[in-house]
Length: 86
Image 1 (tube, rainbow, N blue to C red):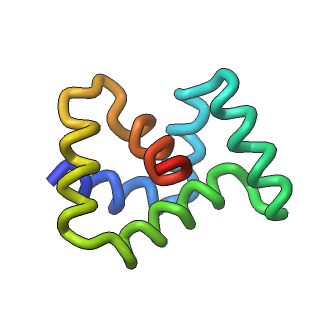
Image 2 (tube, rainbow, N blue to C red; image 1 turned 60 degrees about the vertical axis):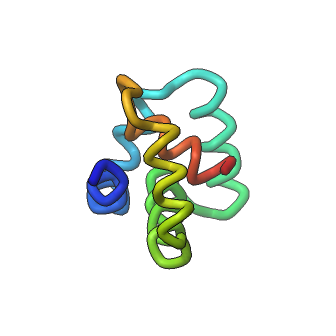
């Protein structure tokens, strides 16, 4: 259920942007640099990664992600890290 909710919300550019702003630090800076290299905003790249995960991930991968993020205090932030770096 958590993974479904993350996919539903973070596939929105504005929500993804807010999650990245919440992360901040080196990760957000590196993510933003990668987005610029792709000629995208950071929120746009995050939303695209979330949508890509949603389209390709098998149930086993979704379960693995759920295992990694369950109990995390900022699971949407952790999820963006997972989508980008795996």
